[in-house]
Amino acid sequence: MLDFVLNITVGQFLKSAAYAIPAVFFWYILFRFQNKKALNVEIIRDAFLIGMCSIIPLLFYQYAYTHWFPTISAEYLGGIFRNSDIITSMGQIIIAFLALGGFFVVIVSGFTIFYSLFTKDSFKNTLKAIISEPLNFSATGIIFLLILVIDMILRAFTPFKIPTEIIGSTFILATLEEYSKHLIVRLFDDHKIKNIANAIELSVVVGLSFAFLENTLYFVNTGGQGLQGLIFGRSIFSMFGHMIFSAIFGYYYGIAKFAKSVMLIDTIEKHTPKLPAWFHKIFRFNSATTFEAEKIFEGLIFASLFHTIFNLLMQFNLIIFAVPFLFAGGYLVKCIMESSIVQRDFSLVGTKTMPEADFEKLVWKVSIAKHLDEIKKIHPNKEKK
Picture 1: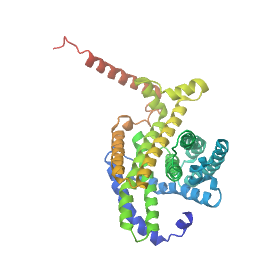
Picture 2: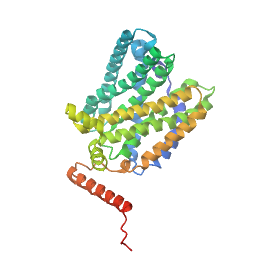
Picture 3: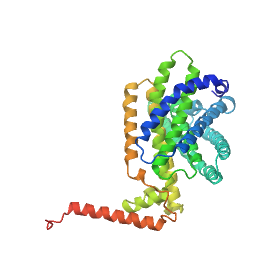
Picture 4: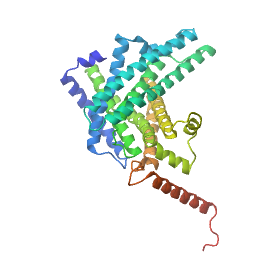
């Protein structure tokens, strides 16, 4: 695929890009109607341009397993359990993931260097990204392992199995796409996000940018025959799908971004999140840091699962199910954007304008007021006339 991309002429690219760009405007404008706290135009423009780079790791990934490391190919990972020897299979998994992990470390480092050349004061942000990405990549590795272990159990104890092409070409590639888009969001987020709504919008723009370049390459590769049908299908289904997947991840990324403030609200209004509190007690990790990692993990999982289901429906031409699936995803995004936590401005917390102590007091007051209203509803004052 990389060889094909390098041979594309400027004229071919611009012509195909002209076919792909209208869908970007359509889906973004539709999303922006649901967003009351939109980012400014300059950030949207820059995010879209840098977002197209999210496809580069996948091109290099395909080139790497084709020419250098076949053990990191989706087909190899998906076909590992054809071997009946479980010990050998687990050894192959470890080798494959070490190769894939090392490859992504190189790509992430390259992205941080590339990105720092085009932004101001981004060194601190990119350094944090390099430090945090091994954990995020481990999250994607866990997703892979879960699917492969499920396949191993099915093959060992039942007559059923997960088809190799579903594990390889569908699930693993869908997860890598979501992870690649996550890298751009993580690297581009240099104090630009003020609330969870901003995080969702930034992720959506990167997702649309990825889909735009992906569609453009598909259009170039197709040529003239069947091009109109491909343009319509990918502009509607693929672009809408990427917007949904990215919005889901952006929601969890936004929660992770403002982990301390969100945890404070959960602690006061509900309960302390079980997972980070449990980790904190046993391992003495920073609870907010653990909560942040948990939300990144959840975002990658849910975005990858939605992406995988969509890919399966399209792969088997189940359009009758793909349409309601996308509508359900769109409705989910609408509900997310309308939720109260998405619209809160968390960026002021911890600053002189809103010290954490003042924010904690404010949340306590709001929580007490809500509880008093609930008590009044349950036990209304009968003496009041």
